[in-house]
Image 1 (cartoon, rainbow, N blue to C red):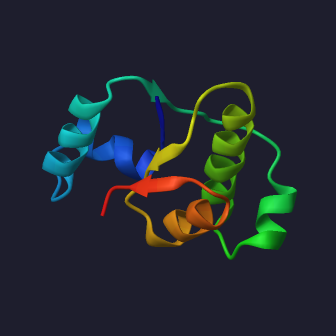
Image 2: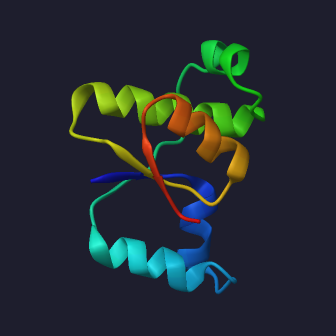
Length: 93
């Protein structure tokens, strides 16, 4: 099971340069976790993220506390760096 950031889900829905990579990662592990809202204040203080990305990181961290989530699929460099600093394996690039 992997957390998918919106930057990684979008290429599954509309053909983009990263669509093949996204489909490959989905085929390797078809269980997706996608989140739309969670508290983010702490993430904004710890990482230089735009607010939407802070929501995604906070959601992945919250999910990781309750399930076997260790990887994030992400095509956004800043979010990927923050996720790696939080201990996630980051897939996408």
